[in-house]
Amino acid sequence: MIITTSEPQGTMQDFIYTCASFYTKLLGIAHFPDTNVHIQIVDALALPCGALGMCHAADDSEIEIEIAVLDGAHDWLETMAHELVHVRQELEDWSHFCEVEAYTLEKPLRAALRHYISNPMERVYAEEAL
Ligand SMILES: [Zn+2]
Image (cartoon, rainbow, N blue to C red; front, side):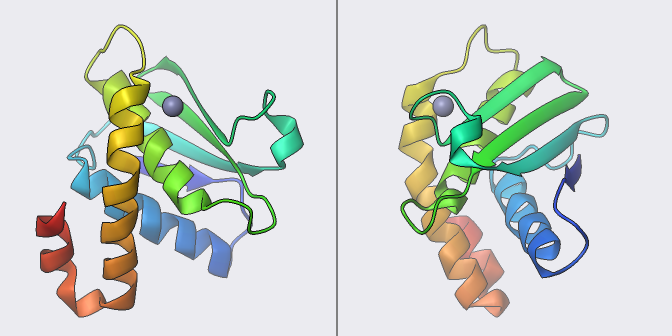
């Protein structure tokens, strides 16, 4: 899997790669060879009313995620986890996205990421915690 982002080269881009790579590894989709997941950070107003994230998949090779970053009003890394669950659903050929699974997994994924970031040497522990 190739992860790209619209963010310019720098700390934020590196951070997005780190977080998205961690999530895709935990979700077991990091190995998909022909999938490009593009992560776009957007203004909340760019998304349909109330949405914090979107996942668009024309096919398995090009999947786009939009994540709204508000002024600390919500945890956008939880949104990233949620949208990457939808990416896995797409790759597993689910007929439609399941919100129940995405909402169920977003918090434990986010908790594992938090643990990973604060304890980079304990990566294995974080992966087993999910
Ligand atoms: Zn969703």
